[in-house]
Length: 401
Image (tube, rainbow, N blue to C red; front, side, top):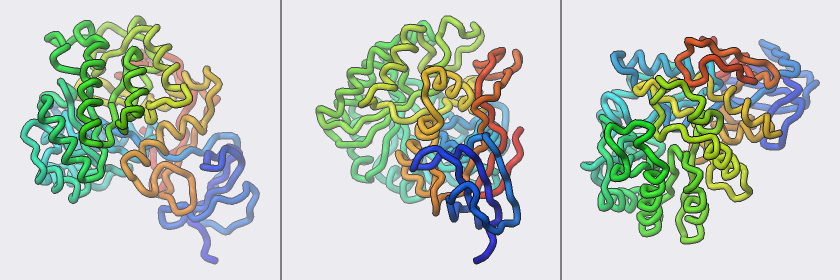
């Protein structure tokens, strides 16, 4: 038998069967074996992580890439570096804000060229805007976008206009025929004050938008994923959608689960939707941990166009909050890797399993990270638990920024 390129051992490997000691054999960028910890096998490189856990690489859904004042190539390079530092090996780039927004095949080609040669895998969401027709949607799907995204307010501003009632319903019917997923920023523009500061973005904006989405999806039969869900008072509406035949799920972000608005630095205003109260944060956790929760994925909410730099810190921040609730690494990996990969059909991503891509993260759940006061993330000045130690993307170890 040919030798492996690498063998990685850990006493805590997160696999679909659970967490335990194992050895992961890698050849040609893929996982070829997951065997017992002490298995004697031939490899060019042997790595023993000891008690440092081995997780599947993160799959970040709806990552904002565009950095104002930077070229698209540089924006993607910066996202790649931040992703690796945060244990993310696959980025699903948001259609907007972006220059150009990914609303046609020509724009998709521009983004593909800009993302060439990165250390992380990059996939793309297609944008649905007021002028999008069935031909554009079909062409984008055929060209490889893994899902679509739209906004009911300024979730894609200024590069992707919001959808009205008729446009939303029409797009949902067309996307149902394409058997794909629609991600929706649900804040309703009619409920937002302007300028839409945090004070002018009340929870009822999410509720009104969610009501519109449920009504449209019920008619169209479209698989729909709310991104990002923050307002805990809307949980009942989200949860009961299935009882009326609506295939509706949601994504939230670590900062909504970790940071109440009362503790946020006053100069941070980039969240869309905004951070909410401590009471809302606790209620959001209750919804998230309920047995039949519709919140299935957690994404970074990275949005550099609005000064939200969260990709690098998201995994540690989420683990900080999750471990306090006696949750484990299996749940962490499911929320950030397995579930998002399954949602948008990324075959071979999101699991440590034979035949899957060798996207792996060495994560020390006991180490702490002291975030600098000058860090651009909303976690500046905080001490987080859990550190990304090493990352392999398609079997190659990548340097951390």
